[in-house]
Amino acid sequence: FSDDRGYVLYPQIGDRLDLICPASDPPGLRAPPEYEYYKLYLVSSREQADRCEVTGTPNLLLTCDKPTSDMRFTIKFQEYSPNLWGHEFKTMQDYYIIGEWEVTKS
Image 1: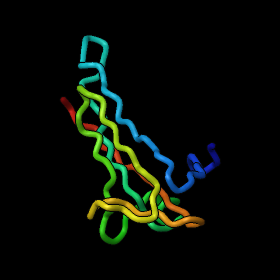
Image 2: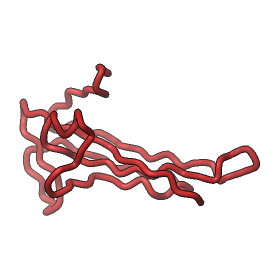
Image 3: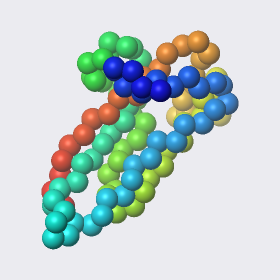
Image 4: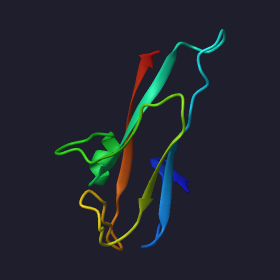
């Protein structure tokens, strides 16, 4: 689903969401010699999401920094995580994912 402020999903506890960083073709004669690198963060408030701003301790989900291969990060919506660094999600609470990017010459 999409609204004027991004994509809106309504996952249930137990659902999974795959975030994929696609590979880029190696630079060729017609391709620009630059790649866009992304960092995706989980932020805690709508205000941070609206401003696309990370405040406080960043909760980095994924860094898309390998242009020659696909990368996949799966979020499992669970109330309790067995992993010390795992994410925990509560029912009827909103969560926001934002991205930062930079262009780097290869």
